[in-house]
Image 1 (cartoon, rainbow, N blue to C red):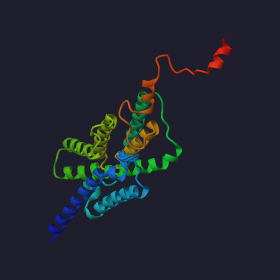
Image 2 (spheres, rainbow, N blue to C red; image 1 turned 120 degrees about the vertical axis):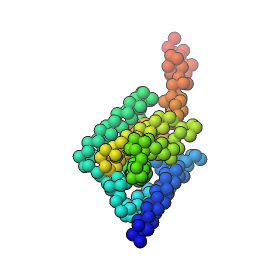
Image 3 (cartoon, rainbow, N blue to C red; image 1 turned 120 degrees about the horizontal axis):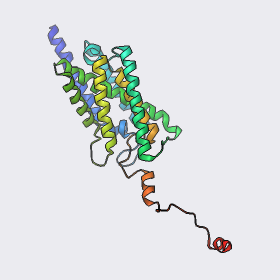
Length: 256
């Protein structure tokens, strides 16, 4: 009877895990994660829809942690080694901030600080998305594969690929920078999770990286593909010798 009960709980956890993956696949409809700024038709989703995505994702994670008999030991849904989590998380965050600054400097020749009014929404989106992503892919999915006996490196690669596919950043017309960044977040986060025994380090680094990209590029969601940013369009239209202000004909005659 007890074995049947454990099997039932395991199946429920798998079902909730699949719901989390489906929720991540549907982030564009809710206007969250990489799709925070606009939808395909150019409209901004209402705040209630976004809050529903965040709330539903958090609720599913809590439900898994409550139903599973060992969520911290098997699914990494905890801090793990606290010292390692803080150290690894800060190093991960530092790398994320550094790459965001480097990308903005190379791409835009400046740091594109966004409007101050967009900070609260961007902070919520960065934090909530990082928590749901880490709990789902570096927590439940990676933990389940390791529990089933899969080799750690192979499991990490698989969850990284699954995570990247779920974000749908490889679709045509999207900036490849975010695709590469997502692969890096997934792989480094998975490695830190396996080493520290919890998702805390990966969550800290992931959230900091997302918010740093927002601060450096001015984009809450996705950066635009190369050549479509305002600065890049302006550089293409600028004359070789630069813009010059031309006065009226009367002013030119007076100068003569």
